[in-house]
Image 1 (tube, rainbow, N blue to C red):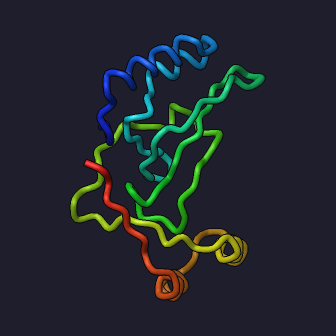
Image 2: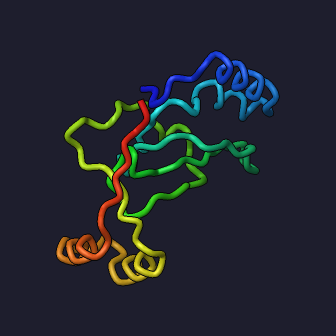
Length: 142
């Protein structure tokens, strides 16, 4: 589902950009656009595209996506690279009753969590952190 409706100018610029891409990247960019909301198959997070990377030594094209509090409940917003476009599924916008936002945990807190709890922090740890770092919520643009 599109999370923003592109204008005629945006669409024309996108077509021009895609036409100039290397063939392997062009094939991916023709299937995935920057206005559609996707779900990462492995994490279930909603993401949108930021960029494509040229094929690696094996000919694999990957992309970079954004994981934001606008479409998810996250500890921190981030851009993730090396994503296989085949791992993206078009998805719906969040439901009106979903809790969304970002806690924007400082990097030191995130590093500590990852070191101490590689499989994920227990609920009591997360609750304590949530009390320290209030949820920043954003309303998406109409």
